[in-house]
Image 1: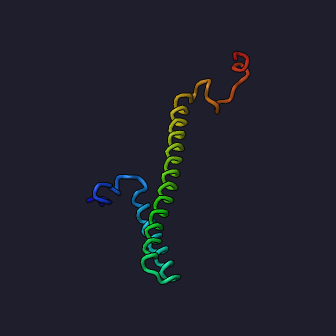
Image 2: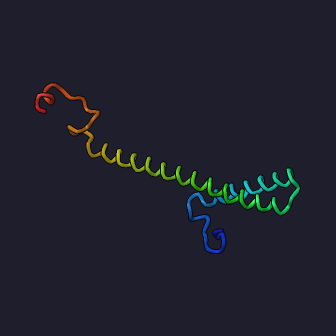
Image 3: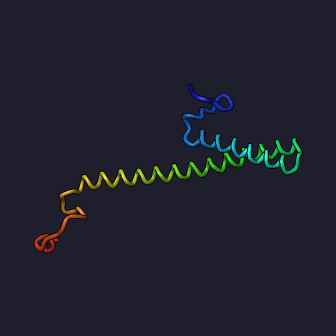
Length: 107
């Protein structure tokens, strides 16, 4: 059973959405409670809490998506390198193969 935010946003299937909502709610609680303890103004503290939720959620969302994109790029590069290694292993294009004197004179 999945959790849907606002009735249509499936939090479990979207990468980084669950963590963003959780960190956003924690940021909302900290900022709203902190503002209330500092000023004792309830309505303004609720406004600060909503702003804290939005800022924290969006901040962590962009941070998480950036790291996810970097990880996918590294995985793609590693996969390409492994495929090239299998293709070139044992051939004259293999960078780890030591060249002998006969091979040097041929090229």
